Amino acid sequence: MKTCIITGASQGIGRAAAIRMSRDPEVGNLVLIARSEDGLAATRDAMESDGKRIELVAFDLADLDAVPAMVKRVNEEFGSIDMLLNIAGYAEPAALLDTTTENIMTTFQVNVFALIVLTRECVKYMRHSASKILNVASTAGVTSRPGWLAYAASKAAVVSISNTLTDELAEYGIKVYSISPGRCATELRRKLAPEEDPSTIMQPEDVAEVIATLMRDDETCLDGQNLIVRQAPKAGR
Ligand SMILES: NC(=O)c1ccc[n+]([C@@H]2O[C@H](COP(=O)([O-])OP(=O)(O)OC[C@H]3O[C@@H](n4cnc5c(N)ncnc54)[C@H](OP(=O)(O)O)[C@@H]3O)[C@@H](O)[C@H]2O)c1
Image (cartoon, rainbow, N blue to C red; front, side, top):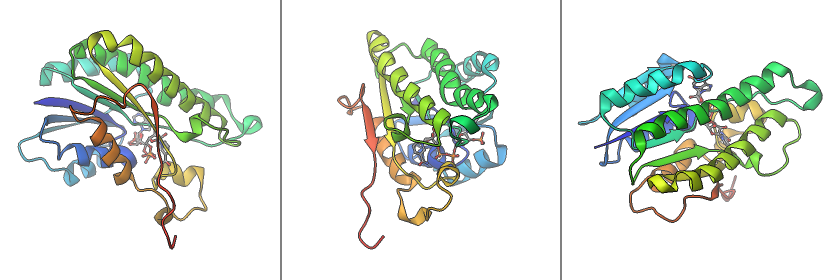
């Protein structure tokens, strides 16, 4: 049975991914990471837990020094790490002249540095074929986003990290995926576009379905590229 670690699992796309992955018969253990205990508990309540072990890890990913011990403990408990879904993200949109140093630091700490450190620690226990890593970047990391400087730059870094890791981890048989969702109805999107009607855009469950497809054993062609996940506007919207 596979062990799947999911960050950002307390809400939004991470929650939807956790719920969707709990329906995967190959996955026996799910480790959900985020800071909010209540959010994680609500995610667990919505998951299909039949015969699965679901562990909630209330953890601040900005605490980079604590990541190695956390991952070591997870590996000891479950005996392997087979999938890592790096979904957690932070956004506090601001243009250059309004961007505080703290904003830049927190954005990169969560979106980039924590992703690298968590991936490094998981790969130590992952070195066998059929393991998969998925990083959630953003269309904001691919094209210009005036007013979202630090966030957009951090997501460009996620695309770059995914490219390099695809080649670096190939020798271990680990596949690395990168997805760049477009507008998706979550809290984070509400911060970026407060005026938007969330019912008119892509839902977290849509992105979760794509993630589940990429995590299947028989998906072997879509790693190593930045996949844009976007929904065309529906008629009547
Ligand atoms: N929504 C969109 O339109 C969109 C588009 C492209 C890309 N994305 C990306 O998709 C991913 C998921 O975002 P979302 O839209 O689902 O946003 P969301 O609803 O705001 O969820 C963000 C998640 O990240 C977690 N997180 C944030 N800071 C953390 C920290 N310091 N330590 C641990 N966990 C932390 C949050 O958990 P806690 O607050 O409980 O810690 C939450 O579970 C992000 O990487 C985002 O950049 C979103």
